[in-house]
Length: 114
Length: 113
Image (cartoon, rainbow over all chains, first blue to last red; front, top):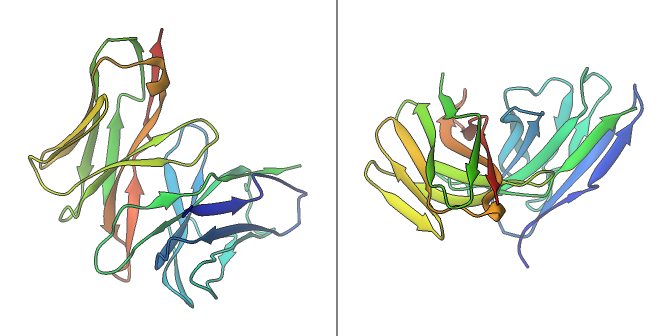
């Protein structure tokens, strides 16, 4: 089945550690996105990539880094510079191109700082 | 700055009690509006795309409509399984002319049996 796979589902991080969240898609989509969701809030964009080897910062990129070496993969690293990393992280993909088509989401990774 | 506002923040309905959720937006040139359903602890599930004023889309008990300033998600005779958070989003052009989705904060719908 085509879709987006995020792993792990739950992740615990000690303060001062970097952690990497995985996102893989087999939808052959060009565009991929990382969003952060906090309780009672909408989704906020961290980073997005319209094509392999290219990505742009979203609204809240500080303390995060990404790479896009393959079309299928868009991992997100939460660095120790992110002051409040506890949140629900969502990866999405869309066809991209000239317009923005509907995005399809993974099931999310819940990150907790302990 | 592009903005999306959803109301109400929360809505409690009795089973069978129809109602509507609102999504108002301010964007420079609408390029579509998307509705999603999100269950607790899961990723949003795509429901509808609307591209032009007057357009309507239906799926089971849900119907989405679009005007030049807002969209409505009408829920007819809801059932408890319709309980979820409903999100709307619009494409917006960020700096550098790349496109992204701007989301509203959602309406949390609870349907009581």
